Length: 497
Ligand code: GLN
Image (cartoon, rainbow, N blue to C red; front, side, top):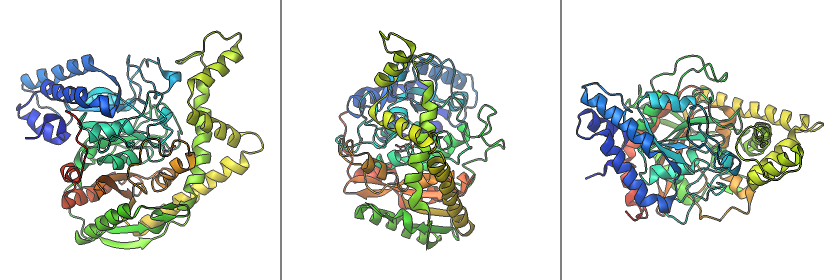
């Protein structure tokens, strides 16, 4: 018998709708699971029990009154601690926001609450979403539920480990260069980065505003589609949000993919300085062969400028970050250094004590790139290269419906293995960063394992094509039988409890 905490949202919904379980029972199961395993996994930095039970009781009251419930009513959610929550501490896992209590909900949180979703807690992350392992969290790292000595990936590592360890039914992450997809791959779950502009960023604490997107991390593809239906759509409070209504992301699930054109960009399989691990490549090639057996037409292709994505990203993202993070000066938000003699010392002490090493590194890189005399050489040039990268994708999508690659070049690495070498850490993202540069949607789906650790299949589609992307991901998932159970049999470490 499957434990309630291990259910997908759509399976739990069926039980709730038939009144075989109550929202309170489901929530009890999730908190019991958190109590049993989170000491080891550390997915959460804060729990919201009281509000969660009040919300669950409200759903149960509606059920008792004979009201029909929506697909996400009563579903427990793990929420990345980068999204503002009214009256609930929102830290971005930084000392500088350690005591920040927002007076409003992010748009995504508003919408999820309106859909009846129950946030159970805020999840761990790399400070200000800068990182690929959660080791940059000011509150200590999360651990990979498959092997507690390894990282869960990042920056949305807590949301992904919460899914991998069944500490909620659905999760929300954010992705600026891979932070939804890479941790989803490392934890053996599904992660979708929507098209830039598909989901409102209102109330999302900004890292690099032209790249940041919010999206679901879930246990299967159908759940990702259901979460998208709840969070996507126009919002006048985010000027980059597409004004047209979002399509139904479940619309194409279950349709067969015969004749679908699948491109395999060779630059996402090998690049100077990075090799995709043989076990990862084998799993991804096997997945591509399966897509072919399902009727897809597979062909190799090229994204000639993709190899410039990493250097371009490390100009644009730090430049935007240095500007966005200028607001943390000890005056309006969060931490203020004590004992300063004057305003300038107060500000410098606050920033010195409040930010971690990686955040400081990015602020310095970004400030340098934007400084007078260097702007044209760095930021302007990077913006031009970014256009070339986007055009490569646009051209590829004239021929192909979707593109495929590994999500990350390796499986989850041991904690501590890359903390002293930022370049090695950055190289984790060679397959995911080009997608943020282009603004297109992409998803990571489990596609087997490399010596017992999950591998992610990375599928990409043209702007606004989430329904088609989810269709292909779903067809693959159903045919592969890489449900989490199957990956689990390949060797998940059993967490006590
Ligand atoms: N790992 C990348 C970085 O450190 C991407 C992070 C993200 O997507 N938020 O910037």
